[in-house]
Amino acid sequence: MTDRTQAARLARRHALSLLLVLTGLLMLAPVHWLFVTALQPAGNAFSVPPDWLPDKVTFHNFSAVFDLIPYGEMILSSLKITVTVTAGSLITSALAAYAFARLRFPGRDVIFFVLLAALMLPQQLTVIPTFILMRNLGLVDTHASVILPALVNVLGIFLLRQFFLSIPPELDEAARIDGAGHLRILFQVILPLSGPALSALAIFIFQLYWNDFFWPNIFLNSPGKMTLPVGLVALQGSQGGAPALVVFAAIAMIVAPVLVLFLFFQRALIESVASSGLKG
Image (cartoon, rainbow, N blue to C red; front, top):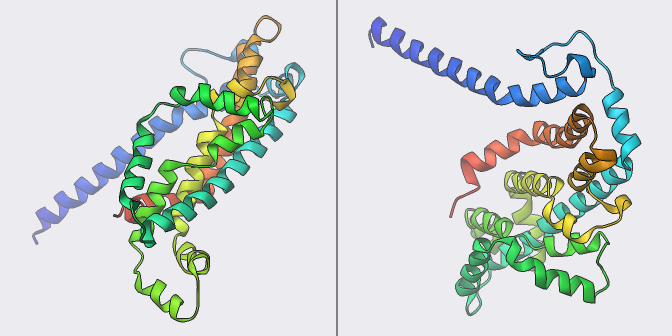
């Protein structure tokens, strides 16, 4: 390999790195602007060009959010619903995925493809029968009405099934020789090897239901039981409309937990998507 070839390859690598850095900064700019704007007093916000490093910082906008709506109760409601749905969906998805990946029973493939077809249905089609069911059960305006319909995640079943299929079945046979049943094989053999897939799915479900507005807005009416996205709309309509910077502060507090979760589990998420999450 000549010096000219090596130099050209090195130049392409540096150009690609520079392009990736610029793309990353471009994607981070709106998030940075959101947090910076939420920390500024009213007179300094929305300046053109934007003030990326403001001289004056205030937390008044964040405290105003708690004065206008029961934000603390909404945080607890969002955490309760999101954590319960995430844990429950992981359990039901793992059990169903194991059945579709490892068990042999009549109509297995047909049932699986019918299940996948449910992904094509918009959630608006199921809202009326779901609401009638919850009303008959007396669960409207309770967190259970949001949690129960979300415990079965078809996409989660599909992703975990594809991952389980990539695990050698010889491990199952070895465990079965030692006297293990299906549940023991799932929890002691399959799931310990599925960390990246489970982490990626947990992040996806957490982000989905942490930001979900549709179902909580249908079922929850009491301010103390509302989730953060529903509370954000209530904040915009409170007292003739909250100031824009207060709304920005509320949005920043909604976005922050998801960013922290991603920072902690980004390695598992990237590993799952890059290497094994979609194997079949």
